[in-house]
Image 1: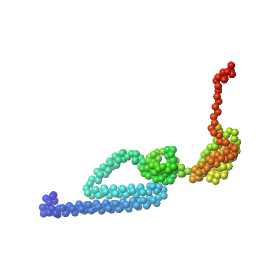
Image 2: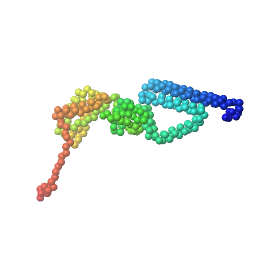
Image 3: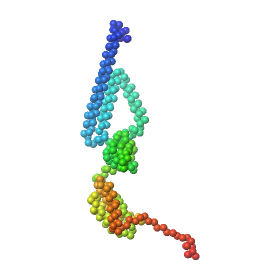
Image 4: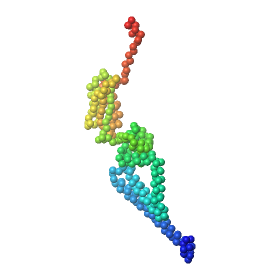
Length: 287
């Protein structure tokens, strides 16, 4: 109506068509900007993904994150540009989004700590998919690291979901990674005090020499380790390849026991001598 008052010769139809053309062009430009921004975001995200995948030092689970971040950033900037074209105060909008982000961050402190822990694990890579790790005294097999939780399973099968903060905040022992890819077996075998110690040592050394999975370097260590309450304890310390450790350990326990018994050495049970003193009999004897 203001346009009509300023120009009485202009018809209402001309005003409507003029406003429609003006806002129509803005709407068309906004649609074009959204489409172009969407296409550019997808193209840049794919380009980023390909570039990240070429870097061998980056964990495979981390490959898709940079592309997603870049895509989201481009879409946000595109939306702000579209709103600005329609006259919205983008500075106020950014301030509102910042305040909302701060409020959400305070409400999700635990979740954000999991994200921070996930980022640290992806940067330092203390383990990878398939590794067996010990955290808090429990052993887990890693299935899928993530930015919030880590999916794993116990050695006997049950599935486990571990919050990242509970992993990163503790000591992580990676059982799948060892120095020189070897691992040590420590066992102790007790023989009776009446048994021949040198014969027992010879039997155990023979087992170590005959077992092909036991390594020569580092050399086996088989010596008397201590004198127990009811047995002479012999330390049986050998090294094997990491992948052979579990089977070798279980096989050696059986072989060493059978060989010691076949060689005349007994593995004694814990024993305790009990002496009974009769107070009445002592008095009668004294009398």
